Amino acid sequence: MIIHVPNVLDAAQLAHCQKLLGQAQWVDGRVTAGYQSARVKNNQQLPEDSAEARELGDLVVRALERTPLFITAALPLRVFPPLFNRYGEGMEFGSHLDNSIRQIPGTPHRIRTDVSATLFLSSPLDYDGGELVVEDVYGTHSIKLPAGDMIVYPASSLHRVTKISRGTRTACFFWVQSMVRDDGARTLLFDMDMGIHRIRQEQPDHPAVVSLTNVYHNLLRRFAEM
Image 1 (cartoon, helix red, strand yellow):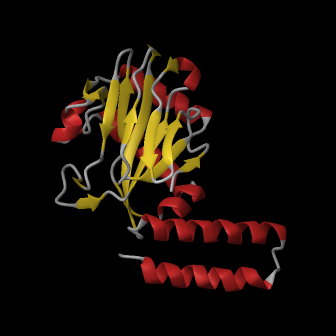
Image 2 (tube, rainbow, N blue to C red; image 1 turned 60 degrees about the vertical axis):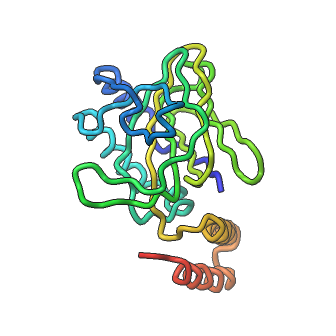
């Protein structure tokens, strides 16, 4: 399931992000790559322990908490501290798969990466290339979203970032351990929740709203792992 989540960050938040990213010290993006990914990764990244990364990561997490579509799509149990990358001209990230388990820096805790997320911080008018390309059972999807919008997709998907031919692309990326690890079950729950929401908007007093909400939560009880 690939879901476009619009307007995660507003204009003021994006301006603050760009200000901090502009004054930050960037390092080789391979610092967080596994062996296979490091062979095809050519970008820059904010050090995870930098003041800018911590401040911006907190901003993003607070924004996610206020984004119902993200909650519905990902059903998050744990969110990996957000990371930030930058692609300049000639940079790209070849086809790769994200690590299935990631250690949270500075802690003994690990998360299972069920869902990957990319939050675009640059306007698509500011760069050429730089599309996120995700492969799933339905084919290949090329994604380039407005600044402040986010894409979430199964972390089990092969994906890549195409070469930048002009400008600079900055983004936030992170992973989610979902309460529901199976993408098919998450998709079923997402579709049902969206259907309930539509009925509630069109006919708020329809008795099916209560019945379907009951079914949704009973399915969530069946699928959820805590």
